[in-house]
Length: 183
Image 1: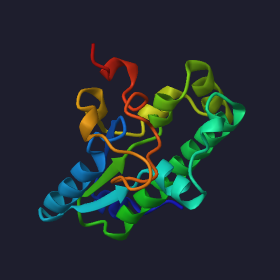
Image 2: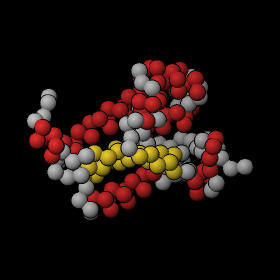
Image 3: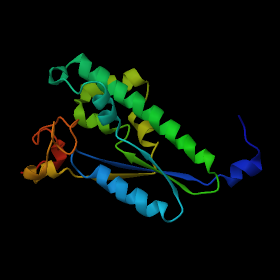
């Protein structure tokens, strides 16, 4: 539905900031701090939570036997589609307060599944979702990459039941992407 020109002009811009990186990088903690500080400056801050954790918490967790199988690819495709839907739905909340500047803060984004796939698996995920990497990257105005503590400080990294994020299933060896691993 088209809006009158005066109404469209009154809508404050929506800036999308993505925090990404390996498990245990501090993304969720940083988002909470940013949300609080930026909200105090008059912005409507909308936080898009990490999709994988929400889905895994709701569905019994990740089954390690899926790794390297078509089930892993299907799961990553579901994560991607759910992420896109969440981003689009939460972005629409900005329309409810057109007079305020808006900031969409994302705890991981559409391209994060690539960290957990081989190149071939990721190509299958993109094909299944009917989207390209370039189109996914264009969804964000700023991407901040954070390094997981598992890359250099394995003793500070926790995962699994009893950890700071029980849905996190990657061991310290699996958590950092290859470009973040130490010598």
